Image (cartoon, rainbow, N blue to C red; front, side, top):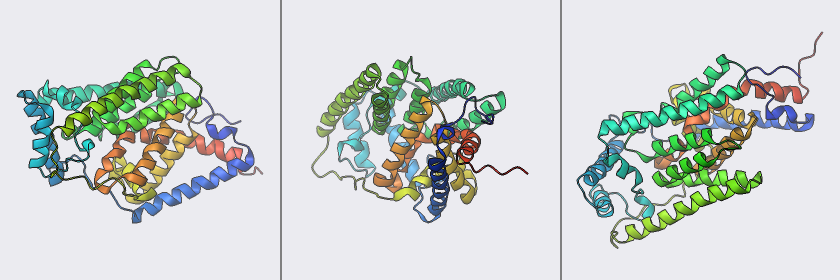
Length: 363
């Protein structure tokens, strides 16, 4: 077996028998072709969080700032949010149109600059734990730096001043931190961090469910209980939240149009491209790199890689089936670590081609 290129051990592709390896090779080619078809799929709005370019973003920022300001002045959260939503012509039904009070409560305790510094600190923690993991997975400083640079390309999209009012960037960074913290021996911090992500943005519950499912598949009963406990606490918090929302919503308040977008695989690819630094590249290469990053995570060895892949697939399915074009920010949950998958592509392709017995013949 040839030596790895950037990794310390062979990828998952190396263990494939020839026939399955050829099948996977064909599926990879098909994946890249399907990614290119995303040019005809719906695209998410550009420059999410850029108030200078989008009036809708500006309205959202003002909404969240008004809520934080009101909490700082001693107002009650739920009446404050209800009135703010009505003033901004936002839907108030169902109860999930109200964000949980966690983030606003924390931000009300800090000046605006303090909230941004808190976000930078969280991003720094993400970079730190993933830097250590990359050091254990790659075979040299160069490949570790490449992986870290790819991580920065995901994190940098989130850790910006204009993103501070939004809930998804905070939850996404916490999800990335939770993934990076989790090891076979120590998973408690990952559970607590995952719970924090859920209490900021409910869509992070899908990540925690994935982690519980992986623990179940791997027959890790104590870890199953940990993730299950986090989901239980979250469910109780959501139940209390729903009850509080019902007290301030009126029968004539508008309702959300729902979440049955059915926008398909191409939209998911466009979201993955648009919520990372790939958005700055030409469309064709960016779409191919999106597909290669997904393949990279499928090829990457180790427990963390399996969990990242499962999380990407879970959110990708959510985006394809239920996301509307204007709720594309659900995809931010997987943005921080997604491009790191590219660091596994050279070894993954090498191992896959070798397993398929498609190596060039020597003279």
